[in-house]
Image 1 (cartoon, protein in one colour):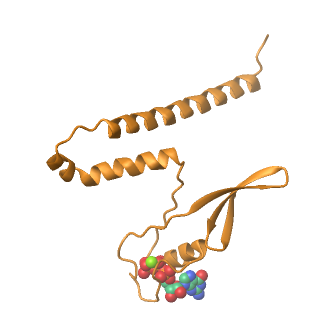
Image 2 (cartoon, rainbow, N blue to C red; image 1 turned 90 degrees about the horizontal axis):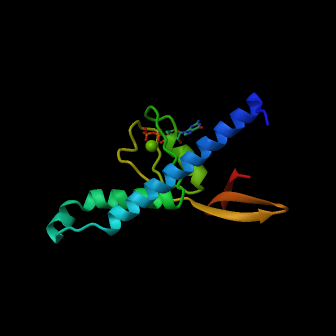
Image 3 (cartoon, protein in one colour; image 1 turned 45 degrees about the horizontal axis):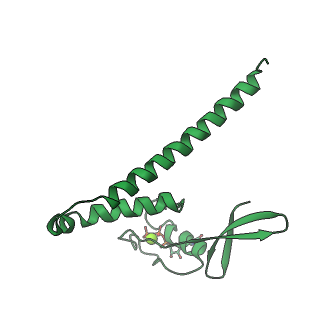
Length: 135
Ligand SMILES: Nc1nc2c(ncn2[C@@H]2O[C@H](COP(=O)(O)OP(=O)(O)OP(=O)(O)O)[C@@H](O)[C@H]2O)c(=O)[nH]1
Ligand SMILES: [Mg+2]
């Protein structure tokens, strides 16, 4: 069988996708293993609490395929307002004065899977608002 350049491109793309999945799985397993096999004294545990927590959060992101959205921009340009609009809740303080937001804030979005017609649609659902992110 002779391969066309499209066949080769397709095979390379498939291989890249498989390699990505393997890397993802390896990262997940490594983190799981690390967190499950921590052998620390209570003093060490206390001292490394923040780092351990960050690793657990990283693992949670890998396991739940968390997508993070961050807003960057000049002061008073509407970052908090946009995030509030997406969330459907006034979680982030907004205001006309520059520099209203002084700390990093976070809010959780919940991903729901719904079946509509023949296809499965995944939605980000916050309060009563829904944003389709995958179809
Ligand atoms: N006219 C208009 N005003 C907006 C819009 N979006 C936000 N604002 C107003 O602009 C001001 C600043 O909005 P914020 O969401 O607080 O902006 P921010 O970028 O988070 O500001 P900092 O946290 O201070 O950096 C507020 O008074 C908002 O009500 C918009 O699309 N149009
Ligand atoms: Mg803000």
